[in-house]
Length: 277
Image 1 (cartoon, rainbow, N blue to C red):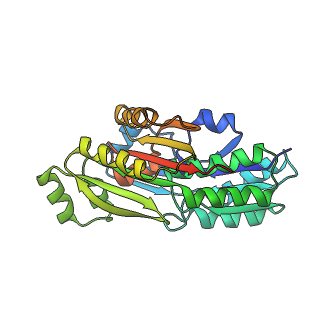
Image 2: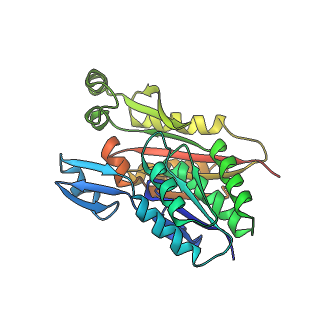
């Protein structure tokens, strides 16, 4: 038996990877035009066509049910990893649900989201697959949380203005100047970086930042993310592969819950350099 791994859908972990590593994904919620559905049930294009869209995390009861289901499979415990507590109430709901489930279960705040969260989850899954104890799997997740990085760009700030995350004047200026905003998701929040003059320049800047972060002799784990911009995500990953053979690499869609706030066209790169032991 091995420690069971559970996460939320904000991790944007592709279904095939979740299946391959026996990871349970608890979906977040979208309410579109007054109708509630789980993350991923409403096509992205249909969701973006609505102005009346709200998001919420899984309920404590949903986390409790997911943990109990995995506890029936193993006596080694469950590790539950969530989106940053500073970005969502999901972490609090996970803590409540885990407490209600009882038994050996730990909850980890990954302090990030999307592909970066997915890389932390995969690090925990790898530790579990090596037969590590619940404490050691939790420790592996904490180490990965400190190592992971995520940079992303969007074509414009319209959705971020609408969500109240940036002022309207910034969105207006961005459209007039043709800039592509850049953000780094780190330490539980999104930090704006110097914008680029267009999407090609933004992708160049993301690759450059990844290259500067390289750790000699370390293994690379990388994820290219997108919201209806798969070609750009594929390009990013191809540029990384041209320089390094990653230990983990995948392209995945940004979760619908996240796209509500960022809008379509988002492209990002998450990575973690794992030093040689």
